[in-house]
Image 1 (tube, rainbow, N blue to C red):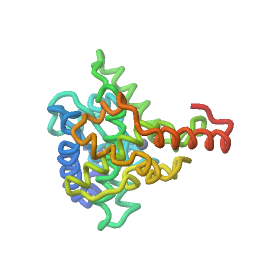
Image 2 (cartoon, helix red, strand yellow):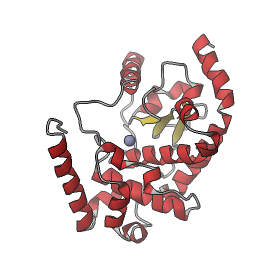
Image 3 (tube, rainbow, N blue to C red):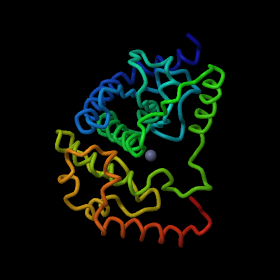
Length: 248
Ligand SMILES: [Zn+2]
């Protein structure tokens, strides 16, 4: 075990409860997005259990379509390919009181699940042909996740209308499944230069209830209410006038 891994391991012992919240969060994901996930594993990795340098500093979590392959060495119960999210439990423990960890961790997992479901494929099915390429990608990903958000793309980059819509459905389903959480507990869109997500939830109306049995990835093929589209268009126009130099 390297010195770095040692340091993380002793910290990890203090963060043991986060592992339990992640186990609970995974089963919540399965209850509310079961048809989307099917029999695939959903890997939620604790950064404290990986060597220092492999995780992120500026984010509480990150997901990449082939993260399962990149971090396979740190997946204790490998059950084949599947979506994989790294949770920065160290950063969470630093920034939040223990009493809030369950809510915060679950909200972050649901946020990342939103990213997973905002794609046609849950993970990149292409395997690596050689380990050098895998190591190179690991370095690139690790480097990117250590930087603050890019300044050449809009603040909301990666958090478009379909992502917001999925998040609102996830919050509704999670609350029904017994984990009370608001959409803002999953994605604080006002911090991304957009309207508060509550206004998007109002615009969606009873859609989350009407589509309770629908696969969340299939939402994209159903038109959202006009009000929701108008809210997004208004936000895009407002953003463009505030930050005319950013391009998507
Ligand atoms: Zn995000």
